[in-house]
Length: 176
Image (cartoon, rainbow, N blue to C red; front, side, top):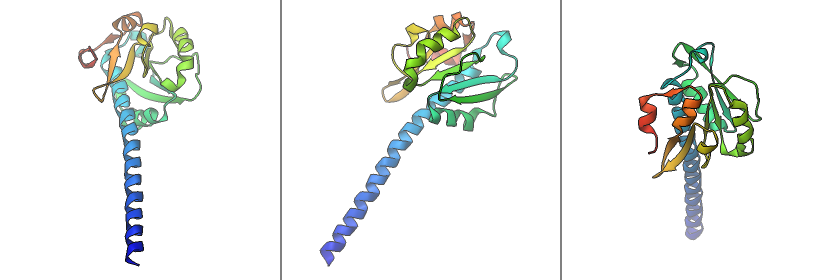
């Protein structure tokens, strides 16, 4: 009887450890989303936007990543960008024609990237991504992992084209 109780105890211990490891993996992904949401907010408040973009609501679109959307809404939707209130939208399908300030395109929506860049041509919208090779194709900011930390690279040419001036903090925090 003792042997079977030890086996049951060991099985329960292994199950608990498996649950803990699973929870840690979820937290890691959630941490990534939280950091990306924070950076998106920092891009909003620490950039100088053209006068015509300083009217109405400040629209942030998260395309294809519910976790990032959730964190932007929970932590930043009630905070202002200058005199503007933030409105955050989550899109599962791309919706052309809106005036957006920031569009975060998740790598799960890579197939729509060229269409989004084409749609944003001539508009004062920052396109933010999270996969390699997008800066040269029109994105202004791209998240990347450097030494196990979420960082970002930045295209000053894309900012200039959009008539948006990145603040000193944004320039200091970028990957060199």
